[in-house]
Image: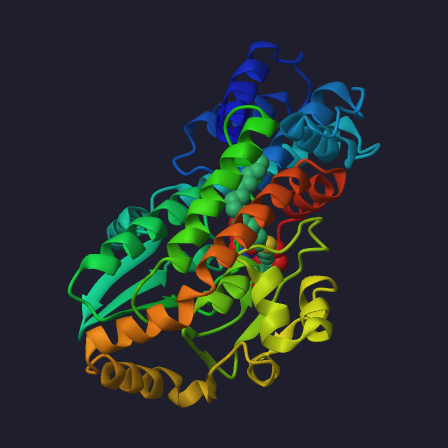
Length: 378
Ligand SMILES: CCCCCCCCCCC/C=C/C(=O)SCCNC(=O)CCNC(=O)[C@H](O)C(C)(C)COP(=O)(O)OP(=O)(O)OC[C@H]1O[C@@H](n2cnc3c(N)ncnc32)[C@H](O)[C@@H]1OP(=O)(O)O
């Protein structure tokens, strides 16, 4: 069951056992009803806060035993409730009413023009694929989440690469919409995964292996236009690209240890090979964030451009490259990759198996929980 579904049921269930009337009880009850009418899903963090405030308002401080580490959903709920400490019931009730009121006003009655824009946004795709001037452009297009990669986006990218490998375009180029290139794996993939945790980890490992293999196998030149910060898998994948053009605003960050995880996308092999083991360890073990120029010095980036001329210079360059004889480029790429392919498949498989176990570890679960239960920014 999806986390969002768990919360919807939880809210419905809670309504069945309403508490006795008190001074602001009517407001509280109205708020409980309003929650059901929200037009927009407020997201897991807000739902956790609503849950915690409801429990505090109706039962007082957290009185449940702490769920086990593998019980993701109930542990997140317990953490949220427990974090309220000894907040008085009346304050919790007031906070609940205030929170619902702010959610209702932000999701209610926008002007006709605004509503049209919202609907369009909902219809828009998180991975945009276009082809022009012989170039398949694949854009991480989820700027409100810093282009974090959801399960659907992994699948969309696999499909886009598969199509681009046989269509009449000459190369594929990845870039991002907005201020980020990509913030890596969507960390809510962990809490939204269906089925049991072990099954989810196993499915995640299969998806990741197929995803990375689709980069290893891509037969045409593969270029990244890194328009801003890149995190996690969006950085490690760069080791499988043929060219990486970066804005001087871009940064490169692989905080795997901080997340209780381990490297993927063959970076445990490509990074030490490219930059030497000491520099690779700085990134992959200690999570050192590199500037664009540092990444260039380590061989991860082909060329750095000033932000002010980045788009114009890079796309002019790419359009020129796309006019080169396509078969010659493909054959040269095949020569470069041929002797590495088996090694890359093996490294990919091993990294995925290692990650599958990591995702079940307490270190990883704690890191994910602390991200998804971050306090919303004011
Ligand atoms: C059970 C097992 C299933 C496993 C399935 C796995 C599938 C394959 C996995 C492949 C392995 C990949 C590993 C990685 O990529 S590790 C790297 C993961 N990424 C991160 O750790 C980055 C997390 N984000 C941040 O640290 C910050 O958000 C960031 C520095 C990127 C930006 O900070 P800033 O303060 O500028 O902006 P906000 O934090 O306010 O972000 C705006 C909104 O975007 C949301 N956001 C950003 N990044 C992510 C993300 N990676 N996952 C989910 N959501 C993200 C953020 O929450 C804000 O949302 P709200 O406005 O709704 O609060």
